[in-house]
Image 1: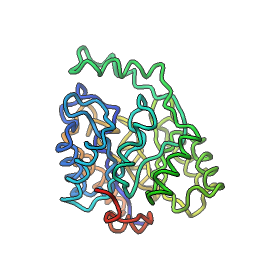
Image 2: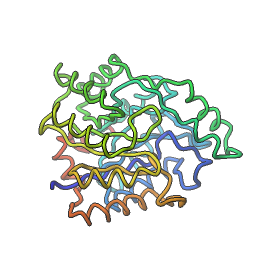
Image 3: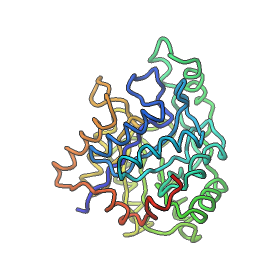
Image 4: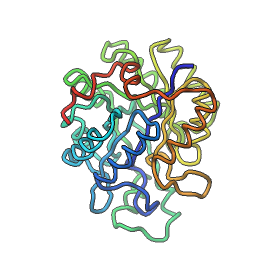
Length: 308
């Protein structure tokens, strides 16, 4: 099997500071976690920013610039900047960081969807910051908006204008057909790096049958012109990524996707999760891809062609 790409999603916008003391919040913390994850074997770092005072999701380009320059100064990992941001942000806010830094890669969500986080509210008696509980409860009546017009704007502003390539985040099988639509229109070119996302309430469930089906449909639609990776929320993280690795796919871990390292045990760092999945995939005979190898595999423009 080909070399395996490990992506680490360092902080995200889903988990809140109450949930774990190990969630990186400040630019210094996020960068340090990314650098350590890279040293553990992650070649791609998927990056969000947070307000350094209270940990809420932020779209501030200055925070992204601080995070990215720190990472670039210490390691060669590929910085993949979110365009998902947070489901409560409008598109302009969600694109602000990527617009400012012209990254090699950014994420792109391939459809509007329900994105239910409200189930987490009952797990905590008190919250550390006033924003956390309303943020989580609000997802009961929230649509994460990613229309065709939104996606076209991302392709134009980041792809055509900046040479940025995409991690296509597919939360359901219909999202693969949406990508095929844009391929048919000539708006995106191979190779396609497709992230299958499992276990989000509102998206496809974290079942092996769903993984094999998503792989089958991607094969049907894109032939040999794609690489697939898998992330799964919470307790499903390691079982689903292990299955992906065994199928010849790639993997994503990190505190954005799960705050645990084992049942009932909080992960103390992103690097802990990278180290765990690296041990598993190497035991399956997979060899870890370096950032330089991934840049070739995904036809990226290179770190020297960013604005950070």
